[in-house]
Image (cartoon, rainbow, N blue to C red):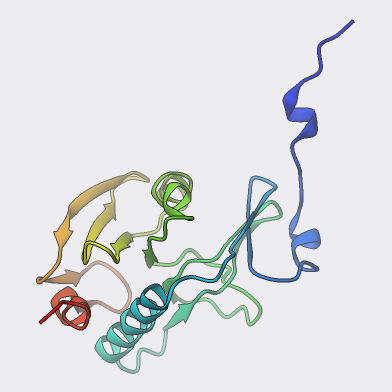
Length: 185
């Protein structure tokens, strides 16, 4: 008698299934990941401030848009929702269809493993130019730059600014201004 394989019991959903689900989900290799419960207020505030900082720095860039929590459909079995993404030259009105140039993920206890491992690997392999992991409790961001489909750490930032270069709409991001709002006085 042949032994049963665990893989036979793993879900294998597609984008067609995903489109009908209620609530917030990500789909990685056909496996659904619930984006619940909703993130804490600090997480959501940071996402908003990051979005505002990028929008204020890139100004009116006709080729790029800054998106919050939008579906990035990589293929039929992979749909991710970056917290904040800078996407250029993508005219698909339904979802992100081009590789974002910059992605920020604000780390929550429930998503840390996925953001630091699975998404880290996927984003590198897809050619995301910069990946920024923001740690709300420590008020620090770890920035990675893509080098031949592999991320290399640029550094850790808490009060500094960083020039995001070699992208369609280059900008300087002020981490100090973002985190200052949360520092105890």
